[in-house]
Image (cartoon, rainbow, N blue to C red; front, side, top):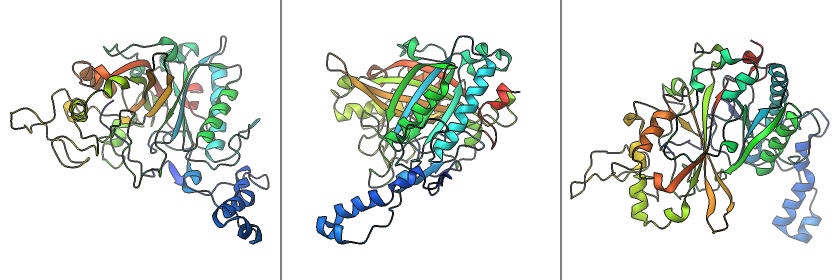
Length: 427
């Protein structure tokens, strides 16, 4: 879990705040938040008698959480540079037996049309379930990617990027193959759980007979607005997680995260590669450590994320600082020291994870941890060198276990009138 994070108080080029659009059907399904819901709010605020005597309440607008909207069409796919969302679903599909390039193209066309509508706060194109009827877009993003096996199933082996070669084995791997990889990968994120589920169900239904679910995982983050001020997320170990994430304002951000327009293969222009890992946190063992011991493992203070060498969360870590005994203040095996880009040949990735909790085992152990998702222009220069170094001596390793893994090529965004992956499937 490299020490890099997403600033939550940022609105990138792919996300804009906008009123809920009119669906063209008279009263929008989202407009049902209007008079009935608003009257209920007035009654709750003023008391029964006063509320019933008052004039009809005006339609109450959605809060910023509900009205925030990300845009589907653009240079990059949504769900990469946006801030962390409160709810997430990851789902991988395998093409059905006999399905090939033609069926895959039709599926991506359906999925893209559905994503465009749902992200705008509109109903699904076909057989909408009404699960999200009363909500706004809620920063919904839907992102599509291709796994290594997709290219063989569609006869497109010559178009498979070398960057999509299988990841090497790591010592922390205890991988369940049934919950790893897949022909197609979909990432769904939103700031409302029903909006996220609604999108998941629509995507699953759209798959029809062309593809079947291989695996599916659910995650969450802190809800925007739950803290007094925007701050870096915490993980289930209680640690501020991701302080050194690359920022879009940095001059080399695009180069490190996205495939250049002149890159190879051509269909991956402005795309990125997503490494997806289900990392179980051994919380019972972790929580037995003292606060000081936990901070030594990470290399940062638990309370505010500041490096043990001093300062605040954003203060550069002083790796040479020693204590009165001459020992490094930030231990050599500290997670934050090992994952620093300047200690890994400049290797960098944009982390955009979700926490997960899948219940409690029979022995009382929580099945919980991190759905680790990181984005980079080339995983051989991003994720792989950092993970190899973590394998050689990360103090955090005894407290985590990598249980599932996937690597996916995520093409650039679709222009208006196009669908995601069109340049690959029709090129």
